[in-house]
Length: 152
Image (cartoon, rainbow, N blue to C red; front, side):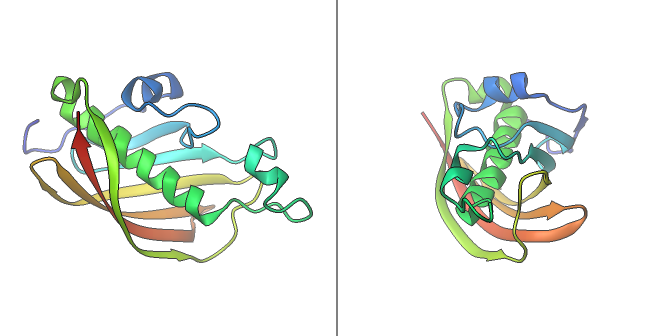
């Protein structure tokens, strides 16, 4: 990977599935856009009433669980890392190491388009640290900082 960030075209769900191992019902990012390799990206998640977690969270007032919003952010970052590393990422996975400063500002509900803004804060060897924000209609709904490790 070069030290100069490189912009890329949008990445669709099929390419995301090539980059990270998550599958339904745990694949929580549908698209990557505004990609700068090795630096930042925006993931998009169309939140629908058909999500399995809405059956129990909560039947009368469906709200996306905060932990799944953070997972969506992490999947966006993982896809960015794998895309940025290219062939170097072959046979590797991205694992959560820590989650810090998670805050949830507004509920995410069926019908929302959740935007997952991830920005690299640090990268040393196989450790990456990201800050992330979840937004709906431009409004901040969640934020967190997390660290991930690339491993075989």
